Image (cartoon, rainbow, N blue to C red):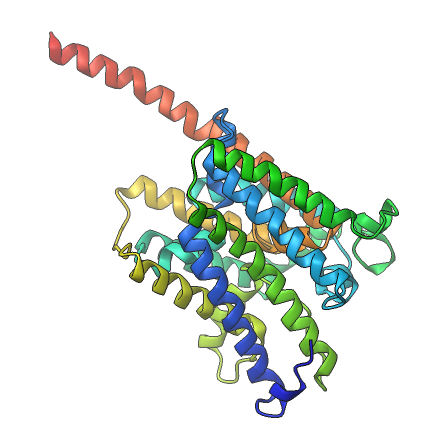
Length: 365
């Protein structure tokens, strides 16, 4: 994809911001209309169901593989040029950070991407949690928590100063990843039909995966034509949230893809909710919910930076290029989330049920 004509009209930094806005806008609309959320899928799985939320997540994940790997086969993108593949990966960071993120997203009742989408539609709980997520992410990147993140990430790293390509490590022939994506997509569609999900939701769920591919192709194309080095990246919310926070706190902020991504998601999700009449102000119901959400957001902020990405950044974007640490982080996010729902939410629900029954019996007496 040749972006030279665009560079004749815009400088590199402004074009990067524009690409971020476009990518974020697609993601925001698609995520809002599909209700895509890793936390919802993991909770559904923890409660013994392969239901519509898992179908949506699987369709998003699989279509990201399909779109991204199709772009690779067409020569529009090279995974080896991506930032996640060109830096040293951390096995320990993926494990510890992934588990922390999984715990946090269940406590906060949404992953970082979902919180941003909900905040755009008037959910004040998500606004508070999202701000805490961004602050802690920045602290883990360059602040007081950075030494702890660096130490934990350095415990076990990938060799040769770069991440491990799962496809290359097993000498997979060209087209293997695309075939895998199509197989998972077929399973997701079967599951969606079984639970009578409307086609509109399926289209928007695949749109989230499409947004990931758009981000990869646009940033890769810009990197091939720009004079200054450009980080080849796509949809993620740990680094961009921290960057967006500093954008408002510094006099001379850096303009790049990340700075356009977050506002793009906000605009896209807001417009989608507005057109579907789903804008609604919501707040915390009590102090315990607020404490729980704040703790969850903090765990997600540190966990995402340690794991190399959030549920979207590592789980879908990094997974779509088969970065080994991204797949490991995604697995640990599932484990952490399922365990938290089993230990915290389901046990507390069981504890409340007997109390409610006793109260009902007393009332009847």
